[in-house]
Amino acid sequence: MSMEDAVPERVIEDRLKRILDLASREGLEYVLLAQPENVQYATGFDVVGNPPKTAYALVAESLEGPILMVPPLEYKEAVDTVSPLVKVVSFKLGEKPLKALLRLLVEYQVRGCVGLDLCTREMADGLRAKLEVREVKDLNDGLLKLRE
Image 1: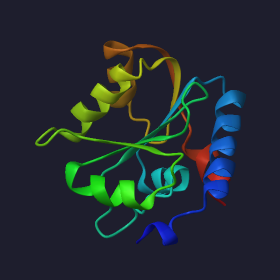
Image 2: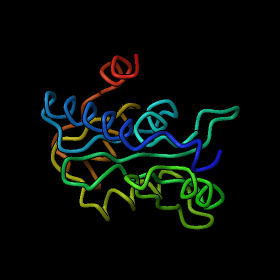
Image 3: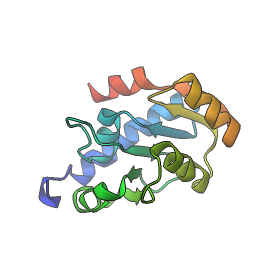
Image 4: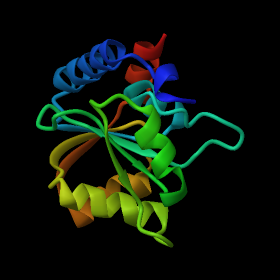
């Protein structure tokens, strides 16, 4: 996939607006995406494959655009193919994905109410324990409706 094949910026802007509207309706300050379909929807990065690529996206009104976190081997492809609206960051070489994700959340001072598309008890408890997260909400159904 080349930049010419990238999802147009206006489409990413529209998708971002829809995600932020959902977050606002749910009283959320941040939306954390881990499911490949949702990461691809928010960023335009082709993570849906066999096997799907490991990637995360962070969306918030306080950010200038979605943040896409990918493994080091996917970084160049991501930078070369996503809209300039998307900020691409990478795991550190050898870093485990969840540790990388926690580092990203700490760096961007994620706190308050967070929506997740892959809301496990372990993930919710981890966010509350390691960050100043008051509430964690499962957004999977709402995001599924956005993608329809």
